[in-house]
View 1 (tube, rainbow, N blue to C red):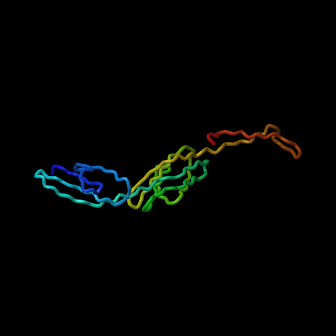
View 2 (cartoon, rainbow, N blue to C red):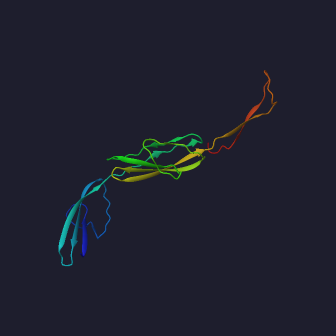
Length: 171
């Protein structure tokens, strides 16, 4: 075999690509007839067409939210697919584990910090899309009430109380 010629647009002209292994990007999802013509050293030719199914990929999307330590986050999964269906959504909450969940997942972080959440959506045809979002878990404020006056307060007397804040960042 001296030549491999490809027809990707079904026009009968084998000029869209050449070679034993080729790459071609279809612009839309559909079933496309793909043709291959081979030419031998004696100038003999053979042609074959095969239907190739191009599936649509999901578009992964979610809305991250920030929370205070001790509160669960709820992530709004807004993944879409133009045709077909989503097989599953794999979430990684930046904790080293993959979790397959449907709907809008809730997750409780045990430490304050910034977390990179990943959503991998997989269609029933095996097409994939991934998106990332950042979740910030804030430290709880540490509050102390300070009494500037006497430690004993009697009925009818007043005292001055004040709040001492510490550990507040980005709240």
